[in-house]
Amino acid sequence: MKNMSILVLEDEPFQRLVAGTVLRKLGVGRIREAAEGAEALRILETFGDVDIVLCDLRMAGMDGLTFLRHASHAGGIRSVILSRATVH
Image 1 (cartoon, one colour):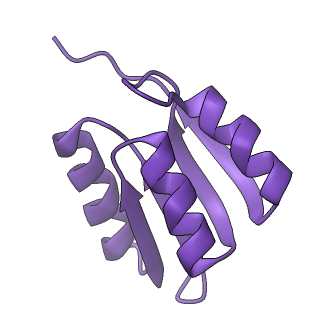
Image 2 (cartoon, helix red, strand yellow):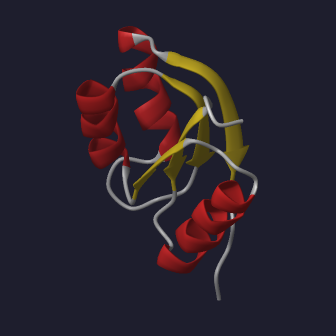
């Protein structure tokens, strides 16, 4: 897993922290984190392809589906894991 690259797209800071922590403990080599879709697109432009995007569907600003639509035109994402968490 050291060679794996994962982008965590999650607007809730605690959930983003938990996902990043778990991935680091699993030995994932490259983890990028973004709080919203536009930031995630900039990360892809800057750092290139990722193996997996862990993508929150429901976010303020650019939501996960809009992000995936934009990112699909550029390519560079091999797999997507969709999530939707509700915080009360």
